[in-house]
Structures are given as C-alpha cells and as structure tokens.
Figure (cartoon, rainbow, N blue to C red):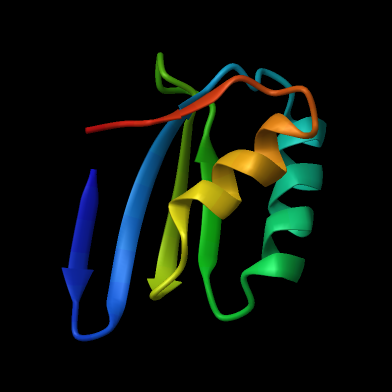
Length: 77
C-alpha cells in the first residue's frame, strides 16, 4: 500500500517479526539506509506491520534489507 504526498511516501509491509528486540534492530538497520524516514513496527497487528514513511524511497530496498536478516516480508497492497 503506497500513499504519496508532495515527495513523501508511505509503504506498509507485513512481516513475521515477533520479538521487540528484533524489530528494534531492524528499525536501526533501515534508518541507516533510509535517513529521514520514520520507521516502526506494529507487532500487535496480525500482520506484524512494518511502516516506512518519508522522502521517496525504493520499497525493494526495504524488502531486501529485511529479508537479508532472515525475516519474511511482503508489501501490502
């Protein structure tokens, strides 16, 4: 699901992340690669949502960084 407003976008991904520590580590990794983006997990949601909001970025980069860490991740439509 992509929302775009004046050179800003929001992408929402479903993941299989269950632990807060792992979510925090992934947020730190993503923030290194996507400076200026707001990144957070909603582990209470059944889809274990990863939300990335910020300047225009490539969702494929998010998918690659997260899956490189052994996490299942897919873009929600």
